Amino acid sequence: MTLSSVRAQLPETALMKVEGLPFPKIGSGKVREIYDLGENLLIIATDRISAFDVVLPNGIPGKGILLTQISLWWFARAGAVMPTHLVPDHDAALAEVLGEKFAFLAPRSMLVQKLNPLPIEAVVRGYLAGSGWKEYRKTGGILDHRLPEGLQESSRLPVPIFTPSTKEAEGHDEPITEARCAEILGEEIFKQVKTATLNLFDLGSQIAAQAGLILADTKFEFGTDANGNLFLIDEVLTPDSSRYWPQEGYAPGKAQPSFDKQFVRDWLEAQPWNKQAPGPVLPEAVVRQTRDLYLDALEKLRTVA
Figure 1 (cartoon, rainbow, N blue to C red):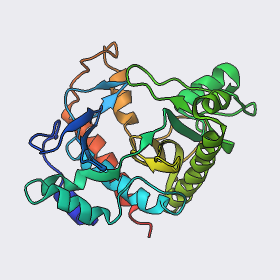
Figure 2: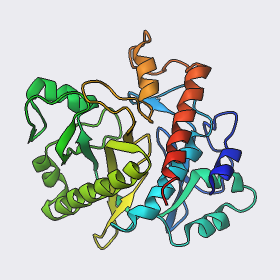
Figure 3: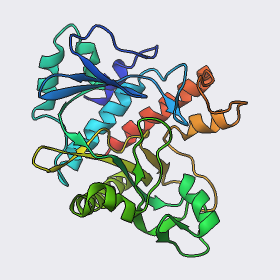
Figure 4: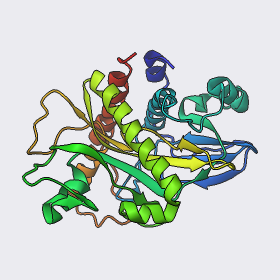
């Protein structure tokens, strides 16, 4: 989709649930609805937004469209590194599945192969931020990675580091060491996942730099087919799964402005809320600025050929 067509299809109200599709729904996550099409799956991104593992009462209009379009843009480039879960001739196949009646869902939908998701999230960090910065202040490292002394918040790491976590159906994901990750996945798959993660992060960092962005950290998810082949799945390098900073004005020693939902988290942290459901209703100004950040990220990335 062109940028102008993406903007034209952004709704005024958030799509919080999907109704009427003639396919069995087999999953409903914090953001996405998943439908079984036999050999393939239909994944639809709603406009729901979550923070601190709680889905907030109101969403961000058009968020599902923006995140899907960012993912599709990155999947097209990630294919140079490894296979992805998208079906061949994706757009045409998706249009055929949705038909005219549900064509309005196409901008927020992906048609993907059925794969076996790995039970870990492949987190990679190139800069010291978020929970990584908190742990470094306490221990001088992150998990099994010892880091140089004297680093500041938002400092660039000497090399990107692989810091996987568990993927929990309920509750919080838990960071794990590389050794524990290898126990969970098996040594062969672990090596493939770590290599793919670092290669994808390198690709993402180079492309983001061309768009005037710093890719500070991100997470990838992977799945395998019946033959054990590894595929990139879920979403990829979106502002929901990644921390993007503008290159202009970057200076370590403080938190950086970002193109992700950290803006929402910061607002929530200032509220009298115990981080249990239901969460607070986001004010219109927060909703609008969050959508603008997602749209700005897409527009910046689309400047790269």
